[in-house]
Amino acid sequence: MDSSEYIKKRIQSLTEDSDEIRSLSPVTNDFDSWSALKLILHSAAVNMYTTVLENTDYFQDLFYIDALAGSGVSTYGDDDTCFLGSPIIAAKVAQEPFKKMYLIEWDEDKAAALETRLQYIFDNHADALEPEEWEVIQGDANTHLPKVADDISEVREGGFNYYCFIDNQELNVKWDAIDSLTPKPWGDLLINLPTASGIGRNATKRPVPKELNDFYCTDLNEEDLPQSNVRPKMKALYRKCLTQNGRPIQRITNIDANVGSYEYDLLYATRETGGENGYIRVIEYVKEFIEDVHAGDVDAFLDVIHDDQSSFEQYLPNEDVDDEIPDKEAESQTSLADF
Ligand SMILES: C[S@@+](CC[C@H](N)C(=O)[O-])C[C@H]1O[C@@H](n2cnc3c(N)ncnc32)[C@H](O)[C@@H]1O
Image (cartoon, rainbow, N blue to C red; front, side, top):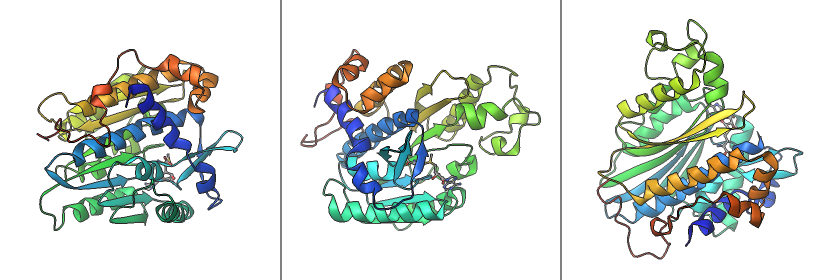
């Protein structure tokens, strides 16, 4: 599959059958259009993760964790347009079924809507791969992530690994919960850093508010934080926490709508695998696409999302990663064999 085809598939995965899936419940999440960009990266990350890791001999079981799972559908703008939520995208783009999907959502109505929607797609859509087990957990991710880590670690022999999406809107998932996912079981994280909202708004206050301090692995009151342009320092500190936590391989994708108060970063973090691999190169490629799209104006961006061919081509990165994109039929992938 060539690179442009690959990105197109990622974009299609955000909206395919979304009206049908939305109609199963009146409950949705609200969205702003720029949020769709994070889902393109999520779609690519799940797709590559399942393709590459399933094809190594080492891993028998792959798990999916969605710490802030939502209702399964998000609407934006005039409410006519909707996107699929991250758990549904994951089920649809995974190359092999997960062993188990853990979907944590605080809000009772959203958790119920997600459960209804997932049951429906597993029953009716052959492209959504039903895991051996899946569970919508209604409650606080900070309480449930440690339990999920225990559950994954229990009674397993052989290699296993997880992909965990943490789609923070504010300072939702605290450091202790992330720490509980490490070092065992091993897994990859895709974290939405609320760079402008939760972080930027609080980082110049003294003392540093507890909710921000709890988001980091270190006492921020002991750090030399600047009083202006604080965001780069805060990102660097978060990356340092993840490095100390055993995930030094990181790729950060910045979404900045240039309106001051709207900026988030997507941080993909994994552990050292002993060299370059195609997996990370595809994340880099998609990152470049996303950062170019967000640098355009909102109309151009919506054209891309709605599959306008000419707009789409203009944002494709120059280099190609065709060799890194595994076809479903490929015999074997060895790039993460040493994982
Ligand atoms: C940005 S939305 C997630 C959207 C979802 N990733 C998607 O793509 O559809 C964040 C969700 O997390 C939920 N939430 C907020 N804090 C939470 C917490 N501490 N534990 C579990 N869920 C939480 C909210 O109710 C909301 O549905």
